Amino acid sequence: MKAVITVIGKDMVGILAKISTVCAEKGINVIEVTQSILQDMFAMIMIVDISAATVPISELSDEFDTLGEKLGLKIHVMHEDVFNSMHRI
Image (cartoon, rainbow, N blue to C red):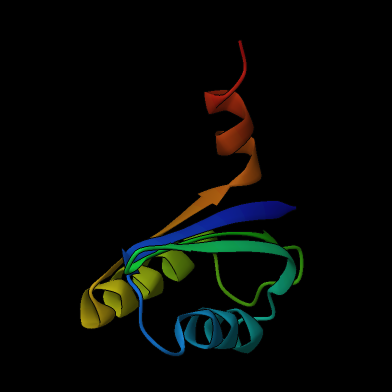
């Protein structure tokens, strides 16, 4: 199973490290990452494998919401099935 994590906010040192650390602590493998910095705005999309996750995706989403508020970022987690359903014609 996979999920999509998106991060948007003001650029600062350590965003990727903080998100990756949470994933590692929860048994989530980062498969692919793309990130861009547009002027001073940071944007990242991660594809992660949640097959071996130690927490349900709802708990992961709550933890990222809390981290996002602390860092001034919007961090969103979406299960692959939901993502695919949203983009199906």
